[in-house]
Image 1 (tube, rainbow, N blue to C red):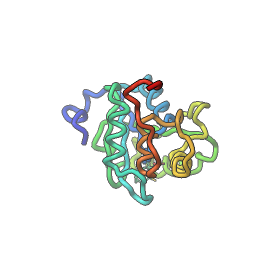
Image 2 (cartoon, rainbow, N blue to C red):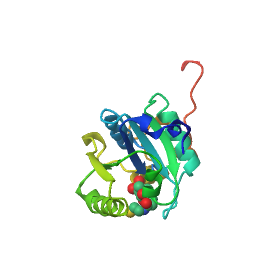
Image 3 (cartoon, protein in one colour):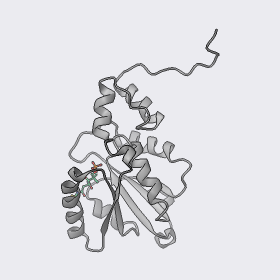
Length: 183
Ligand code: PNS
């Protein structure tokens, strides 16, 4: 459990858990977090250890990137979990799981997951937020594919993520010039 989550769980106000692989985090995810922070007192970004799928970034790398990206959002807590999501949720005082929906194609997977979680923990609800129109085509999977093939993902993921993707795929990372362009 994250340091910020220790102490009296009831002190945290209205808490939502936003679970996912976040491999990597995109502006679509960030948009959901920002909108959720308008509704909830705290949002916990719960990053799943690799369960079935092999992730590109280790859970430590994903947690570190998320902490850097949300360093100025004190009400966003970055944490990770292993095993069943409902078991993790029971350790917090959250009653709401948050998921983004991009298109109807997401619905079936999300419906099954929400129904299974609800059956495992009857006091837990899943709240869906529609992804903003600017990001409805953005997914971690397509971001990785485009980045791997050398395409640009700028504007779709934070610069830190774009840089880390290039490093992972051993693509040249533009070096910041410390001196002027004319020399
Ligand atoms: O970003 P993703 O990959 O769609 O997130 C899926 C995630 C991690 C939320 C889901 O796979 C999950 O909750 N995994 C933990 C295992 C679990 O609780 N499974 C039962 C829910 S169907």
